[in-house]
Image (cartoon, rainbow, N blue to C red; front, side):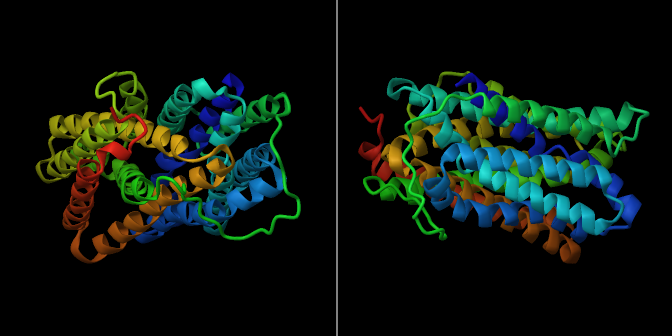
Length: 389
C-alpha cells in the first residue's frame, strides 16, 4: 500500500508543477490571458476524455497496466517540457500530461484497493486523498523556489527533478506483487461511466457535484494565484505563488487530520461551506488588495478542500462493489475535472470582456448556488449514507 501511495503523491506532484512557470511562458512566447488559460485547460480537457475510457481499459488490461501507462506518459510529458522551444510544444506537453493524469487518476485508487484489505479501505482512501493534495501543493511550491532562486535553467530544472521522481515511481510500480484481479481481454473499449447501482442518488446528486465544485475552485485559484501575487503583493517573485498554492493544497492535506466532523456527509457539507466562504473572501482580497484577506481566504479554502476531497473520495470508494470501483472512481474524477476545465475556461474568457474581478463574481455566484444544492441533499436522504446511524 505504501508504495502505491508514494506513486500517487509523485503523480500529484507533477499535476500543478508548471503553474509558477506560466508567467515565464507568457512573457517568453507573448501569450495573452486566454492563451495561458487554454494552456491550463487543455490538460483538463485531455484528462476528461481518458477518464471516460479508463474504466473499460482497466477492465481489459488491468489497473496496474493503466497506472503504469499513466506514469510512462508523465515521463514523456516531462521530456517534451524540457525540450520545448515554441508554444505548440507547451500545449503538446500539457495535453500528454492530461492524458497521463487521466489514465492514472482514474485507476490508481482502484489499484490501491486491490492491495488493501476490506477493513482498511476507508483508511487507504483517506491516505490517498492526503497524498494527492500534498503532491498538488508541493509541485508548484518546489517549482516556484527553483525558478526564482536557481541559476541553472529555471525552465528546465523543475522538470529534471520531476523526471527523477517519475523514474522512482515507475520502479515502485514494477516492484508491486501481482493481484488476483480479473481481466477481460475481449471487453470492448468504450466511453463508460460507472455509477453505483445501489447508491445512484447519493453519487449523482451529492458526491459528483461536491467534487465538481471543489475542483472548479481549485482550477480558478491555481490559475489566478500569479495574478493575485502581482496585484496584492506587488511582487513578481514566483516563489510566493508556489508558497500560496502549498498553503491552499498542502494545507488541505493537513486539515484531513482533524477528526471533526466524523460523518462523511457532514464533513462534505462543512467543507463545501468553507470552500464557498473562502472563495468570496479571496475575491474580496482582490477588490481591497488585502494580504490579510488573501491568507484568511486561502486557509479557509485549504480546510474546505481537504475535508471535501477526503470525505467524497471515501464515499465514492465505499458505494460500489469491488468490480465497479475503477469506473466509479473514473466517473468521480470525470465530474471533478469537468469542474476544473469548464469554469476555468469560462472565467478566462469572460475576464477578457468584463475584467477579472467581475468574472470572478459571476463564477462565485454560480458555485454558491450549486453548493447550496449539495448541502441540501444530505438533509433529504441522510439515512442513505454508509455511515448513517
